[in-house]
Image (cartoon, rainbow, N blue to C red; front, side):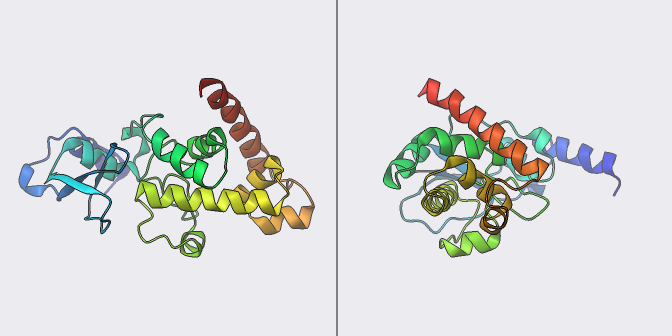
Length: 205
């Protein structure tokens, strides 16, 4: 199927024009903080309440977002309460966590990078396993693991945020080898961008 046809199909699904019988099942859950999330599979989490099941344009739009991010419209404040709760529990700055999430996934829980990083905090599979992630597209699990990883990196690099962020992007080993921010353009730009958003979110909080 050529690119134009695939994009057209994705747009049809996103707009909810696709025949109802062809739609996959969608599940809407209410999270402990009162926010809601849409997923294409059941979540085995006793703290999440299933609100309804069905096929919705919103849910399908989120599904295609992983391959067609131009169809995803995220609310930057959608996960604020979850971020605040988890960040406070692990003593990580709320604005820092939100800034990392902004740069990593643009608040898209279905985000997937070319390297295989997944979810809101863009966790690699090995990192997700390290922190006990069972469902990487579950916002709560993803945020908890991402914040725990940030806490670990901040402790490792003696609370130097620039080095912790560089390690989040390029890996702990790269920072240790170069004894500082690695000379990678992507990593250097990443650190600057996260810190810029952190200042912005600090002013708003």
